[in-house]
Amino acid sequence: MFTLTMHPASEGDCLQLSWGDTQRLHHAIVDLGRTKNYKALAPKLRGLSNVELLVISHIDADHIEGAVPMVREASAPFVPADVWYNAYHHLEAAEKRQASKLHALGAQQAEKLSNGIDKFCWSWNRAFGADGIASVDTPLDGPLLLEGGLKITLLSPGDAELAALKPVWARELAAAKLRPFDPDETKPDAPSGLHPLSTLNVAALAAQPFERDRTEPNGSSIAFLAEYCGRVVLLGADAFPDVIERSLCAIGYSQTKRLKVDLFKISHHGSQRNTSPALLKLLDCTRFAISTDGSRHDHPDAPAIARILINDTARPKKLYFNFDQPNTKAWQRPEIKQAYSYDCIFPGKNETGLTIEI
Image (tube, rainbow, N blue to C red; front, side, top):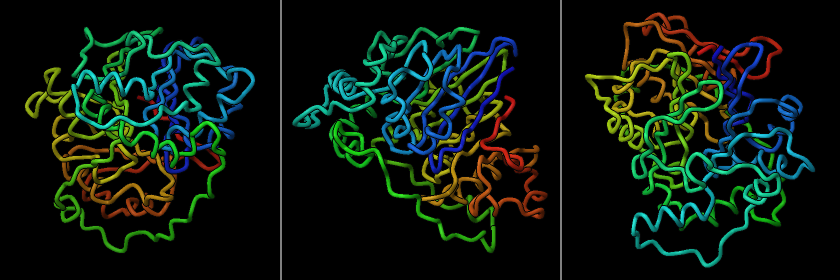
């Protein structure tokens, strides 16, 4: 058994990889969405056994905010064998490796997740010798092997992306309400006010010039390949596509030797700045997962979906959405699905989240 569950996480991510024999499953939790998302999910996570890894991909609130109520609990809801999370001191180490001339912050933020990891005595970045988690710049000797046989190949971030985050760390923590004495409550999600697109010219959307994401927190995202029993999932977090491309090329893949991926959980909830034509050309993939309710940022962007469809028009494709919302509803039109040979999969009635067999 090898599955990816996209739990409801508002506009963000709360993912669960599960693998192994059905009588003894192993799990990896990737991000925890917002506060309300974690509180709704906590009963399912509490007491979960064989959690081999907890990944907090980066410091954007829609990925990390749910970790705050978790670490405030008197005892850990589950016990991960390792936690992957790049904190401020890991950025400092990356900056030193880069020999960068970036300006240092005046004070280090004693942010809540770091304190919580220490409070629970969890192993922290053990697979990386307690150092920062970075690919390419600090290469590992092959994939990492987790208990139960899951292999992980790190793709993002690199030292350059970690070092670039350092000057804006305090600002991002403040925006995410993660400073030691900030309240955890956030404003209610704003309604999108969107309606399904009136027209969908897929070719024109795909032809729009690609402009890549340049926001430092997204660049620091931990993205990786996970392989079990010959099946591969790519978890993109909010990573830069060119960083993933760089890592894939470094391990031998190209447009003429594409990586076979059974499921690609695409970067940044379907933002058009994080799914590039160049990255899609490196992948042999027909199944794509998008996690977002469309609030706040109106994801997924139509050009990103159009690029996926145009990249491979002949083979049948599947788009997995964990919310049926205006920006996903637009892609359910029979004429578009027939023209580009794809189908859309949503959670069933009365289901929360979506579990996908990899």
